[in-house]
Image (cartoon, rainbow, N blue to C red; front, side, top):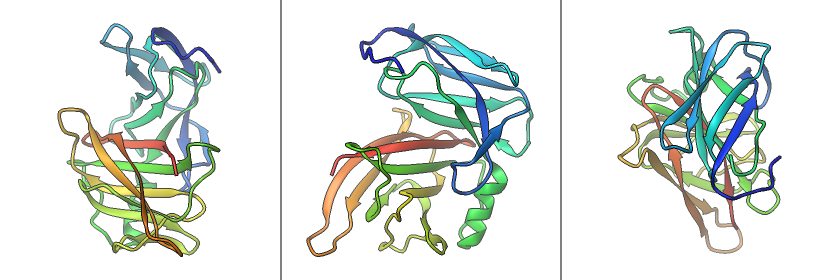
Amino acid sequence: MNPDSDAGTGTLQGNVLLLTDDSFVHATLYEDGATVTADGASGSPVKATWSAPDPFVLDGVARVATNWVSVKPDLVGGNALLTYQAVQTTQVTNVDLALISAATLDGIFTAVSTAPRSPSFGQVVLFFRSAGTGAALSGLHVEMASATGSVYASASGWVLDDGTASTNQSGLVVFGNVDPANSSGTQQVVVTRVATTTAAAPAGQFAVKVVQGAVTIASVAVQL
C-alpha cells in the first residue's frame, strides 16, 4: 500500500488472473500473454507486458482516485475478454488484475433468458460495498439506463431485474449489453436503498467505464 494520496507519477505492478466462476472472486493465474494499459501521468496511456509468472510493471502511471486499467489478452477470440478494472492508484502500487471469461458471462445471460452478449456493447460487473467498512451491501436497487438488462446475484442463482430486485449479501450485479460510453468515457449507475420499514432513499450516482466489446469490473463504494 502507498498511503501518499498526492497526485503525480507512480508505478503499478502485479499479476494477471483469470476469474474462474460467476462469483467473480475465485481466480487462477492467467497463463497466456497480455498487454496491461493504464492512464499515464503525462496524459498518454502507459503499457506493460504480462508473461506469467513474471509480474507486469507499469511506470509513469497517473496517481488518481480511479485509474481504469485494462488487460488485453494476446489470444484473439479466446475465452478471456478485454477487461477494465478500477484501481485506486493513489492508494496502491501492487495489484492483481482480472480477466473475465466469455463463457461465464454467457452462462449468466442464458440462466435468466436475456439477450445474448453482443460485441457491439460493453458488459459491466459491479460489487456494491460500504464506503465506511468495505463490506458488501445487500438491499440496494441499482440502475444503468444504458444497459439492456440488469442481473442480480441471489441465493438461488441469478435474477433478471423487473424493477424490484435488490442486491444480496454479495452485493453483486451484472449489467448486460451496455451502450458504449459517451464522450466522458463512462456511463452512470444510480443506486437506491430499497424500502423496508422506511421509505426508499437515494444512495448515490457513480461513473463506470464502458468500452465496446470489453468487460468492466469494479467495486463501488456506497455512502449510506
